Length: 265
Image 1: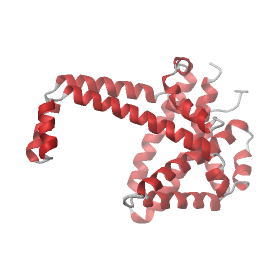
Image 2: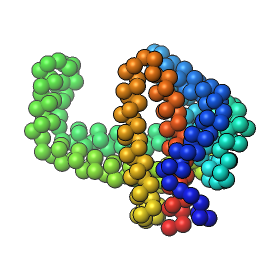
Image 3: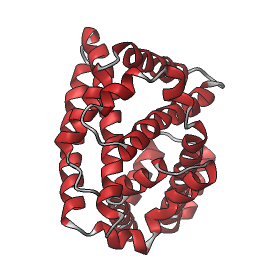
Image 4: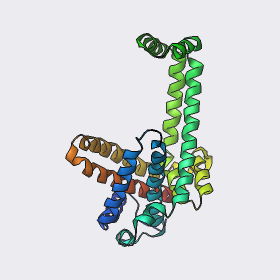
């Protein structure tokens, strides 16, 4: 790690330095993401915009993350922002972003498939088949709720499932950091599945990583609550969007710090 400064405060400072050093770039990026965010609700073609939004958002984080990993000089983020164009910010690492997105999408499908197996194997299939044939109504909703409340097997299965998901989420920043540092579509795709790597997990059990992620989690939690309140006031929505953009930059830096704190373990 070459004795470089690592921490949540440093990450926030660097994220802010990048954003405020080129407001035209930052506001342009926020505007593009907002437009894509709204367009994903368009019927039929909305999925394409949702896909674009996810990949481009990840592409920004990859751009920032790679820069932080390669240079830690005090004024680097300011100089980087001034030398960055919207084209570079969104498309320089588009292939890596696409690979990472596909990897996480596949991982999500795996978790959903496991969840579906747990639910289907624990429910009364004859009752479920009847509900599927007759559609949802007050009676069928009551039947489903009753099956879920009084089904001990389902409770145990979902409890174990939730515990596993929460445990695996501890590795997410370190996995994201390695995806950011990938050099190709295939590499980014494969690195997503490091979430199941015993070698990676062995490196995660150190005080530095735990402290970084614990504080990061608290910051994300409280900022998310604050931003959700801003979205309830129309004229403060632009402020909320800018904060979310800053949070995205901050996350990218934390992901890189996660790599730095675990790669030598």
